[in-house]
Image 1 (cartoon, one colour):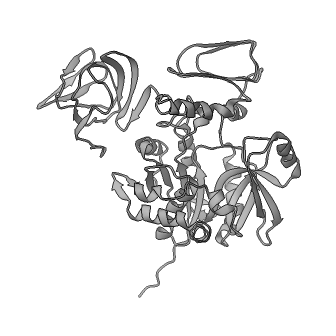
Image 2 (tube, rainbow, N blue to C red; image 1 turned 45 degrees about the vertical axis):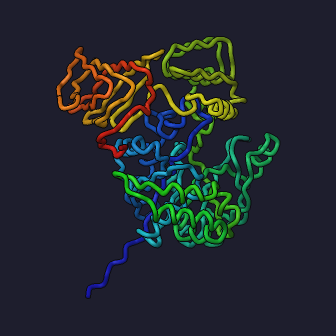
Image 3 (cartoon, helix red, strand yellow; image 1 turned 90 degrees about the vertical axis):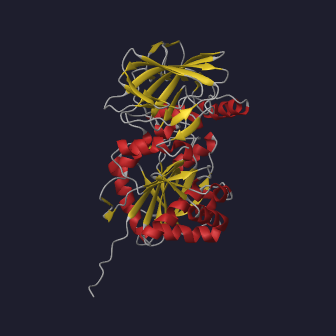
Length: 484
């Protein structure tokens, strides 16, 4: 019998894309958070993160296809953006509820060990920016020997300023035989300015990047030792998971039993195997509008201007418009962000408190924390244009090959007018093509479907009328995306 060739352990990128990004509201919202947005460059942060980890080798070690962990509500957005990036993931894992990074990492580690017992797990938030990709590759190469030796490595970013919005990690003594690696001494929460100045000048404190490199089995061992309830729930959630098209949906009840805890609290603050690798790779967690201003290209007055903006006698500010003209006069160090339904105005100093505004709006039952006027669906998107008593007007975009569910409504009728492209419309047993400047009427209770069988996007205006216009007045009879 021929000797079986041993496959070298691989580096397994894990893209943690379940965050909500509330500090970047009103751009980032619950159903479309910052990791899916192009806030810094022309590409979304998820797309850039996925491409950063794509390659045949990293630090001389083969790289596996990534595992993406996303919120269930974002599954089709994540899938589409990974396709746009040219990345075919090993799996897209759906979290029915958020449970922080320790359970998410446990799920990924269990999956990796099953596929590659000695696999190395590279955990990275999908909503961070790394401007120096080559420096990132070098730091992974530095950290790999320590990870292979059983250490749990975190990357500490050399601080560029006395930042009060980041947590810090402190290095201890160098680790013998592991060049560039140091004992992980302690974690510190976000400091006040005086303490941040001390950290900046110490040479021993680094920003906590939230990026980790560790053997998947080593992480599970430490989790069993320090936070066994996390591992128990993660294992059950994965064992009871179901397949949904290209996705793995974790068991909701089992995941809900997991402690809502980060990797730092669950393992890294307690383990004796922690290692820090200092680095300088142009990193930012883009955790606030002030942070986004800090990493963006500025004009001669220190302003970042995006969209339809007029600024006069303005300095040191971030001004962005996604829709209306925004004019700002005689101000300094402000943040102004306008979407088509919200305007945010704050000083840069107070920008960290945007999260508190979002929480109040959510407690008041307002929709703005969760939804934009544009809502993305697996077949395309719709944007609410106007609404009043008994009516609502939407702009619907159907992607090439997109197909809405066969459905009917109990309380509303719909009138569709095609403004660009060709629609294939089903009404009960009838099927017809509807072209530009043509319309079709869907009476209450009529089974209907909208399709785009062409290679160009389809745009139409939908006018709804009826006694109730909520999105839950849908009876799906058949659906290509498993939403019945």
